Length: 290
Ligand code: AMP
Ligand code: ZN
Ligand code: FE
Ligand code: FE
Image (cartoon, rainbow, N blue to C red):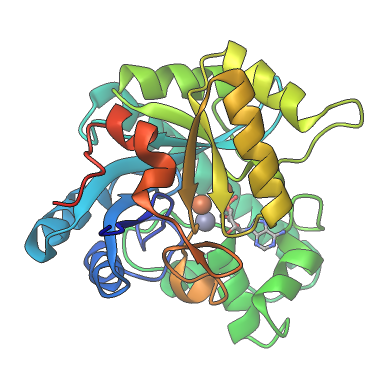
């Protein structure tokens, strides 16, 4: 059997990855990936150039976006796959989120400066590729480059992580809004990296996924680079019980996450198309060898 490798969760310089869309597609081709989804945070700007590159090298590209959601039943990341990247309402919403993100970035700078860290918005903007959706990894990059912290993880632990000293919350869609918007844009909506979702004390993984399913969630990213084999198995079982699709991806960010290579889901395992065949079918991609 001709196994086809897939990666349905990747980032480019359009958000906080370090590869251009074309570089990402070429790297995927070299890694033997046949089906690739580009899922930048809150932007579809990388999709069109990635599609063009994918056609040139002969791999299948799925248009996607990773939406940060906040509100009931809790904070999470949602992957929208198979969307129309030119959908007007989707892009208008993403543009509004980008504006909110820029306002937030200025507040992060103010907090860092108040903490005595010498850093300016211009330095962060200069560290990011032109047109990038600037996010915390770009702040981390500058903090490392200036020798303020030894590495990216320390930058998050000391300053940027969700409850760290310079953290500023960002305007987000609610899960219900993100799911409905994904559907209106023609996509399927999946809970990203369910193993990384922070649950409240009274919550269970399955309870959270049930609550999202009631809002229209289509599936869960059971196969993920940061999951343990036990987590993977657990989320596959939950998906089966709830009649949800399963998805999978690396969450590749290039040099920003050097320990996360393209196409690897956990423990060096490569994701094959057959594991996510129903999802591929739902987004109009045949999992049969081309
Ligand atoms: P932002 O979009 O600005 O909120 O940044 C989100 C990105 O920051 C995520 O995609 C991760 O790459 C990174 N990130 C968030 N929290 C952490 C953390 N605690 N440690 C390392 N990286 C993180
Ligand atoms: Zn990211
Ligand atoms: Fe995420
Ligand atoms: Fe991601």
